[in-house]
Image 1 (cartoon, helix red, strand yellow):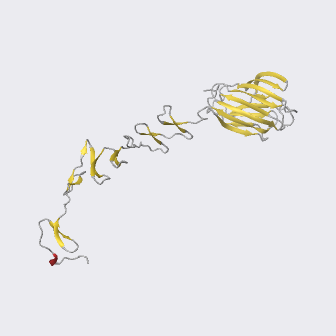
Image 2: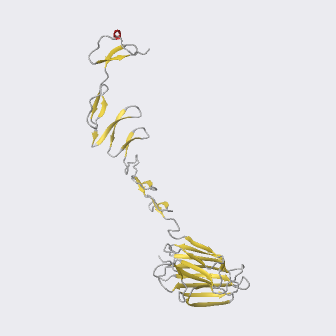
Image 3: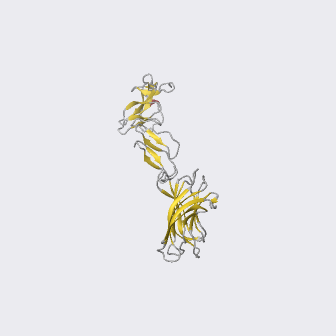
Length: 341
């Protein structure tokens, strides 16, 4: 049974001064008291032991840095100096070292640059870890020209050189084909017309091109100044120029049936700015009324007579009837040869 009371007969003779009464589970004996804790020391003091007694001592310091005791992985104790703004950490070899505060680093340590922006990237600049701010939508992470650091770059086609589709439209017997969306993002636009056929079956319909602004299609009597060199089968060549309400792209009658239609490739330069808008290209079409081997060909160029027109659209249409079928597509080309830079 556990000893839970003291009988006078169980007590031994009085011990020496300062001893305390202890129990071994069976008997009470007098023994030396454990080393007492010292009185509370000054703010910042640490508790140390000399192997016999505890003492309150001032924390050591080296040039303003604090020194703290710690237990190493082998069970022995040592001191570590903590530089202002750093933190202690265990290295892979089991020794203790400091890690620099955010923004620093010494090769062994990783200093984390301060950043509160989602999407930032961390990279090493050869001395410390640095912050690369996030890029914009659709940018790609590439290496800079000196191959020393990453950077964000805008991919093609926005950076220039490649073609970007602005819009496409298919004929469905509802009218002309009009595509908008041209702006200052690109200084040259390419327009492809593929096998357009007219719904009108009476013959004598020609293919035409017009430009427009946010205010609508431009088509007054002197809107365009044009030049064209065309040939229809064995008839020609013919040269024509002057002012007109549109650019004539297929000057001869276009065949309406499935044996052929109107095809063209042309370019529009400087859709905005003080200079006149230029348009140039070539076209071919199957002539109306018979043999699909009979074709018309036309090389054409033109300008808007008025300067400073903020062109944002192009239209393909027939002089008679809606566009029954076929496709028109507009592409933007940044920094194209001959474009406004």
